Image (cartoon, rainbow, N blue to C red; front, side, top):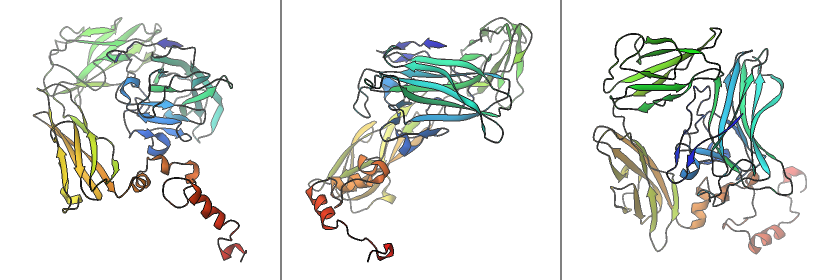
Length: 443
């Protein structure tokens, strides 16, 4: 099953179904950005060569704040989920082949001559695989449209003896003579087939107390639903029983009296689905809140820079996620002097905007604090700046720099000056056939 999803390129407004998800971090919002084999990906197993699998925040290629990108067949991600034998599950992930240039590697990512494959594996209680890997669906490079998010998905029944499943996203070559690029993926999910999905308000959303209508999407086999509603931590009430609907008015629920939302509360609700035979598929609890939430400050990635003419300068770009429930927010940058050399001058100018310039006149490791304040709550994040004597030293100290990410950690820079030239060959020639240690029995 494959469904093309709506992407409005100009405004980057995307309509995406929220899922009662059995996966952790299925939306890929958690974890640092970078090459996944270097920075990791919370909740997920992964495998990759160099430059083949990324976690990124490239805004033109995400459904929310972050997504992933895969560029070769040696890369992939997978996640285990609890399963019940005989139960049918729906698995899916949204894919994008983009013709514009990626900001993190400077290359177009449109994929051709390759497909991205969504598959599932089943395991028994001892972790032994049951049968073979099952392909669920695939995104076809050069066939599926570019620049449009496409949902690939399908239903699979867990076999006898299954205790766990594993959703896998990988890449295969379909044209060995003409292939290139890669694809982005976001919002992976596993749900029990038949569950209600697409809650509105979205799970975890902040809403006005004026909200009256809640809605959801029923599965194809659903005949009627029961709806439960209440506040987190309190007994929840059945407010609709056996209704054939996908919307409900809180001011006029079929069961009970009108519901008025209070400010500063967290509400939870679920939709239990019934088929024509009366079989029930229990829904997952969704939540939304009606109060102002603290802003989320992000100071950006650590920086590794070097002195030139006695100074080092770097542009820091902070960002803030705010729910808009107050009249905006303010930001500030400050130096954590306790972790810095007091003899060094650090200038942050300006210090009250998200993107600022920092000038430092001495080597060292400096920690800066980025604070967001919406008038009610504050949040802070920290970024470190390493200042070194040369570009080469900065490259060596930066764990994400290509200098430190050669296959097996090996490269030809024998004299440590960050390039491979005749000086390095001279060292190799001078020590050619040398016995490195008497322990080798060659001296």
